[in-house]
Length: 93
Image 1 (tube, rainbow, N blue to C red):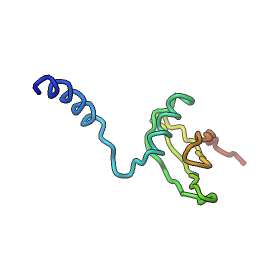
Image 2 (tube, rainbow, N blue to C red):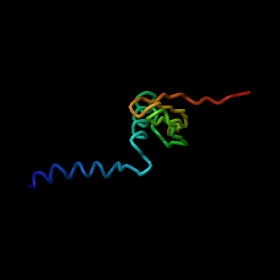
Image 3 (cartoon, helix red, strand yellow):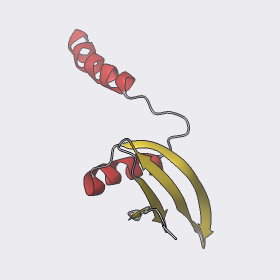
Image 4 (cartoon, rainbow, N blue to C red):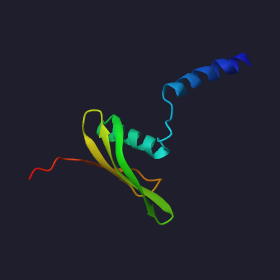
């Protein structure tokens, strides 16, 4: 029994260091991971998003900011698909 506690205790400590916030659904975790892997972006915050009904599934459209100041528009057409990430570029007229 003591050995089981010794193994479980470190796992609990790791989970406590990075708790899942209520507003962080599974899609936000996927977005954060994909931004890091594909764009070298450490997610600062999701600036806004909307859920879009697509048949029997729900898509997502929104904008996220990185710690370095970059912003990305993101779109996902279904919960089992990757996000499409587009860098927001300032428009000069």
